Amino acid sequence: MSMLAALRVLEIADGLTDFGGRMLAELGADVAVVLPVTKANRARTLAWHHGKTVIAPDDAEAIRALAAKADVVLDGQREGDRFGLDKAVSDKTIYIRVAPFSANGPYAGRPATDLTLFALSGLMHVTGEPDGPPLKFPGQQAYALTGIQAATVALLGLYARRRTGKGQKADLSAFQCATLSNYREAIMYEWTGRIGRRRGNMLVRGKSGVRQIWECKDGFVTWSMIDNPSMMRAVVSVMEEKGAAGELSHIDWNNTLVADTPQETIERWQGIVAAFFANHTREELGAWSLEKGWGLSVICSPQDVCDSEHLKARGLFVEVTDEETGKTVSVPGPLFRSAQMDTPRRTLAKPVPASSFTGW
Image (cartoon, rainbow, N blue to C red; front, side):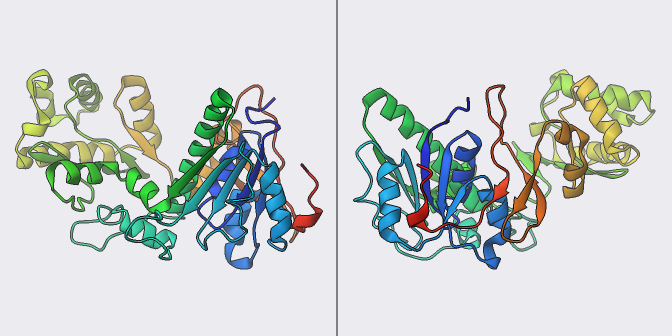
């Protein structure tokens, strides 16, 4: 039995709720999504709506009737309350209204895209090289961040209903969701008045900055020279075995604060590490990290992720058949697994008229 088995979720999808509905479906909820499926949003539809019942936005009265029976309603309100659900939900419903901006804020009623939300949140301001333009993460990260919060609010509402027997209403701002994910910059400004800047491949700690991304023999890894004596000794010990430690062998890491070390000294030390990493593969470095406790992580390319035997064994990817086109594609599947979880449906069904949906 899945965690949310027998739970009925109605989702009004407009990009802001889509990933939240996906998460609830993965937990076992029966999700019906009102979704105008078009070629423009087909890729997102396949990734975020498979396993849901797709309902055409053709009958507002029928959609309101579904809302009255739903345990959870995720109402994407990019265009406002299109179907009049606010008055249709019951007093047992967890009703979550998701809009680009808060209703009482200075941006209330303005349009938004994933790009503009990412920019306004400040995430683009701190992403990229110092002398380059701001950069956006790939995909639709602001939408995904909003969906995660929508699912979290739904679970909190269900917990409250179990304790009180009453439904809940909540308003969610996509702008706030994206901004809160950029917590460090927002908190820094609130408490110090300082505005963060793009640092590129540098993590600033104390008086100095250390590199985060390193090129190796066949790709890239991520690791930083930080104030962790046991970690630094573990890295240097392997470098010594390979005859590549240089002056790093003579440093008393127990009494050295990297954060207080002059930048020019750090750059010299990092040059030694860079030369060592460049002579070894990701597999070698990753294995040493796991065995010795380096805190290093291998950076995988998208193709690496798709080809990973480890991820295949864990069932990360699933095959989804698009009933509209007959095509089958591989997309990320369960976000989590348990022994009790059922295998969800793996199709993207053709839309059904709202008045014809009798699944509930």
